[in-house]
Amino acid sequence: MTNIRRLKKFLINGMILTITALLMNIIGISFNTYIANKIGPEAIGLYQLVMSVYFFFITLATSGINLTATKIVSEEIAKNKYSGAKIAIRKCIIFSLILGIISGIIILFSSNFICTICLHNRMKPLVLYFIATALPFISMSAAINGYFNAIRRVSKSSIVKISEQIVLIIITSYILSILLPNGIEYACISLILGDVIAEILSFFILFLLYLNDKSKYLNTKSKEKIKNNYTARILKITIPLALSSYIKSFLDTVKRLLIPSRLETYGLSCNEALAKYGILNGMVLPILMFPSILIVSFSSLLIPEMSEYNATNNYIKIRNISHRIFKIAFNFSFCIFGIFNNFSSELGILIYNNNEVGNTLYILSPLVIFIYIDTIIDSILKGLNEQVNVVKCNIIDLFVSIICIYFFLPIYGITGYIIVLFISEILNFSISMRILYKKAKIKFNIKEWIIYPFIYTIITSIIIRLLVSRKITIYLLIIKILLFIIIYLFIMLISKLTKSKLLFVKFK
Image 1 (cartoon, helix red, strand yellow):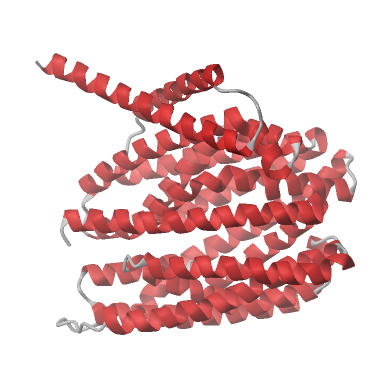
Image 2 (image 1 turned 90 degrees about the vertical axis):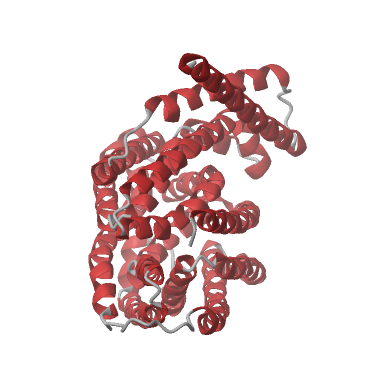
């Protein structure tokens, strides 16, 4: 594949993923707003606890199979071994099915313990039975999505994701209307059951698309004899990744479950602790992460790209691409930081009609820079076969976070948790950047990545505050945000032209 065709395909797939993620996030935030206003912060907090357990068992079920499928299939296709790619993805799906079933069995046998210790006796085991049913389907979907990512046909999985979101909203709304009068517990059951049904239906659609695509795309027979060592290759990637992911997921679950109990130690009641936790994790963080869809969409495509360059030891290409990506990503992150920093109050009131959401969003706005860039770094590292180091970095981060949560929250309350978030994200970013430098010698460009974007943000913020009214309406807020982006881009363009002119004069 030529460089122009590769770039074109990369951009097209990136746009498809971005549009898909944008639609899903708009639908998701709208639905979350509806749910939050309907069931309240306390129920949201309880739901976040259940989701912590859910995510842990999803990690057990998937065990890095998505990344494994992406890497092996992309490597085989790079060598024109299409038959080998077909064998590899089939084995990945079988392996994921086995993992999903095992994970489901584990959750069934540990359901009483989870409900008593982890969920503070606020939920019955029924919700865990629903989760156990979904795990094999979620695991197989992860493998198939890895395949579509590897062959750069993300439009297939994108269609399924949008369909899943629509089905989720319809089913959840219907179940919620029936069960909500029974109390908070049944509100959470409605949300989980809707998700489970949507996951199962989306798997069957995804599987049919995969069967149709495989028969067309992987039909070419390789001239080279295929060595059937794919099981060993799958295990070589999956086992270390799975073990480290299990530790990471376990610590992450402990961290999430520890927060409400340590807030209670601070002096809050169980209901108040769940409400505070619900506001921060269930309301503020989704807003904070919403713009990251652009970063996540393109960064996921970096994995197969970097895998191919890494397979040929083309580190010059890796460094060139990385520098361009980071320059764009830092400018994007600083622009989003400026938007949240200037319009946090309006966002909190207009989305959730809650001043506390806006205040917390303002405080956490600088985090987007570290979170978004760390997403890029992780994807590059995964493409460079450093996925285990990525998880090790996350494990160190979680250990530090758990220790800080244990000691800070009883003293500072929810403020302590905000401090922990800053410590966690800065630590994770620093370690990841260090690993990337050691692997590919990618140096941190402070002037281009930090100083210039920061200046653009400051100037744009000043102009916006001088020109725009502080009146709060949804239409005016949209205009303000669009105006902020336009001014930021204009200042960035002027800066670029000025630097180019100075460079030309100097050269002359």
